[in-house]
Length: 269
Length: 258
Image 1: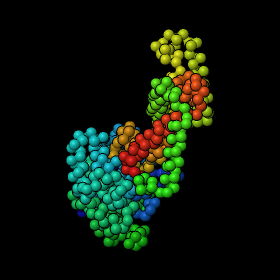
Image 2: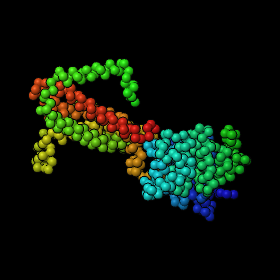
Image 3: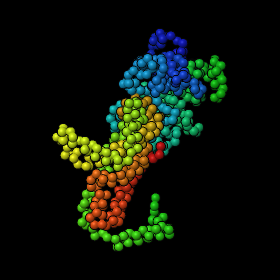
Image 4: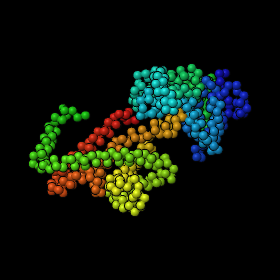
């Protein structure tokens, strides 16, 4: 088995004995918006190099869970541990230490459904923004690296273009380059192809597939079941804020045990 | 874009000919002999108008940023006073504000010996500090409201992206939020700056000698009414045109529409 993400019933001691330090560890995560409880106790572990795909219907809480990991949403309760460092939380789940959050976020890079490239900057400026102004790397170095990344995602000739003049697929590939520019320990993909026209999905998936192949740790919320099956080491199915079923992709897709998962897979295929 | 060819339409040629005739008539049959005598004063007045415009828009805009920010995301004890300030400024005539500052504050200050003996007193005895103060506060009041909308209007995802990369809050404000907010309201700001230009004649009422005051002076001295006013209108139109062009250039520098 290539990975060992743990079931949400597993006792914490089992996680502590894991030989390898987990890149991302989520323990008993709860999140409520007002009276609506979106996450009802989710636990998840991703080891270094794991690709974890998170699937589920809309409203199942998969995006919320991903956004809790880098505290774009503040969890209501639970623990988030990134590379062995637990994020300090107050009793209400809000981050207790802003510096710590900011430092940890620089090691997590997120790719958004709606790309969120900074619209007032060119692609090259987008890619060097965080290295230069957050990580304080020398500008020339950041530019050299950004150019390589843009070549890698196939946008070498677009570095002077503004995001609004690019197709969705190009924007998303640029957003991936921006994420790679910070040398992230973990990449978080929040439905990276959901806002794309069908014919543009492939070019983005190709880039993500490459990243998975080079052993990057990734958490991937996706609706692309075939893709999840192909690249993931571990698949998590969320249903109404709980993990309904998880396991290696062959199991989850090939032999789903839960009735809900069976129905879900039927409905999306 | 207007090209030479597009100007050569019959109705446009007629309009241009009419305008040329009007200019020619103005030049030949109106009185302009007063110009040499008053030119130095007019230039001084023009300079006063320009520096008051630039100083008050720059200072006013710097003040509008915190005013807008406080209203957009501030806690109630910051947003409430900011909103009150903008409401009061926008709800009262500028002329009234200028007079209240000049005659009110201006007559209050001399009653305090420590102000009279301070380094600032030589300035506070003059009219222009009150003019600058009133115009600055007025511009800040209007632009504070504009910036509130501008800050709220920046797409949430733009800030989330910055946040998700661990960008500190002030860096995010400086690099992402403020530039995008300003870009979104550049056309509005251009218009408001032209309005500010046209508000400057009001300071003539508290003895600041800017270009409008010079034209009044010419009229009072020589009883020539229309010629100085026509020239004055031309001067304002040229400045307004330059402001418009400058903002157009700013707008064209960026990525265009989002």
